[in-house]
Image (tube, rainbow, N blue to C red; front, side):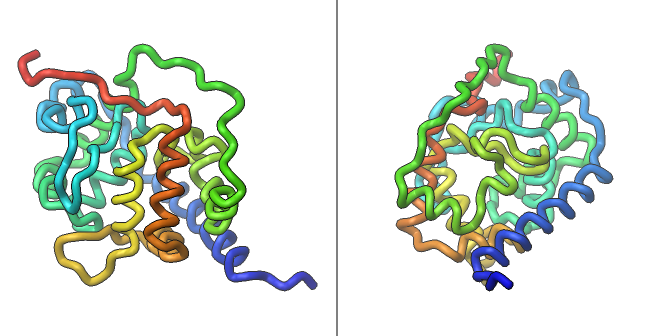
Length: 224
């Protein structure tokens, strides 16, 4: 009988939990109205509607591109901010004002916001041998998809092309425990992120951020 390594076991658990989470998310999903979401997005435009806009908490990094992101994932993220599982004062302040319908509407709007979606190339840039091994260690493709832009379920984020500095900050947040103001609580991602050093997380984020993706920042003005 083949001996199971820690990495193999971790990957199996990761895939199993991803599947369980997908079922729960599908059952709890609520349809959103993108037209209603557009009207509610004024609170989001100040950061997510400015290309390359930078935040300073917990360190300077570009705010994530959310136009074209999976709606189910956006709802999950907003819910986590509202519950405090994701610690971010500004985002929690906004999320606590939203009910489930607000979240569903905003998510539907941002998922369909890009109007000039271009088909992604079939072949993606291959990672170096070192980066390939790092990505394999936590079996990242088991949920985020082989090209990091086609997750196995909409409750997981598209990552390809996302700002590398944001990905790095997010991955470090999953490693953080016991800090009342910083960190993200997520059983699977916390366990996976702790397999890496900060330097390794940064290198992985840089590679994933370099890939062609579907995520965008659509420039918007509050005066529409």
